[in-house]
Amino acid sequence: MGQTDQIIMDGSDVILGRLASRVAKMLLEGKKVVIINSEKIVVSGEPKKLVQFYKNTILDVRAHYSHKWRPKRPRSPTRLFRRTVRGMLPKNKKKGEEALKRLRVYIGTPKKYINKESIKPAGITSDKLGRKFTTLGAISEQLGWKVRSVGE
Image (spheres, one colour):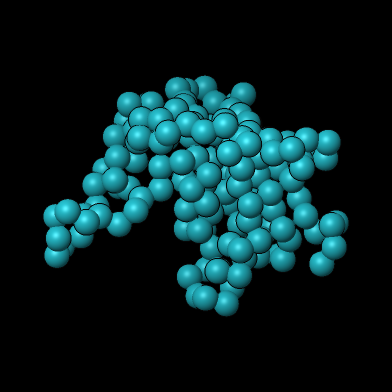
């Protein structure tokens, strides 16, 4: 695989589920996918209900044998996006895990991708949403994500 198989996509103002399904298809085709600006990916719906949904489904799961220990749950936008894509990939080790290894997700734009051309997926942007929405960054902050800059 060469550099032509690597696709750089800008996640700003793109709908989460639609972007994740396209990325999952590309990963299964054997391409390497890089997502930049993951904190600007849009999730459609009422912001308060979305935050409550993520709190209930991701943070509220407890271990049965000890009340002090909890499994680590994703809170950052990069982890939330990876988890969404993982849910759309096959569950077997050979296809799903190998495909997920080809995915890179970044907050902001790292230095090595600044001068490279990125694709803005057509037809799946938030411009067409006629209802309320929020971003993954805003949801992550409500979940307790400590905002870090791109260079860290």
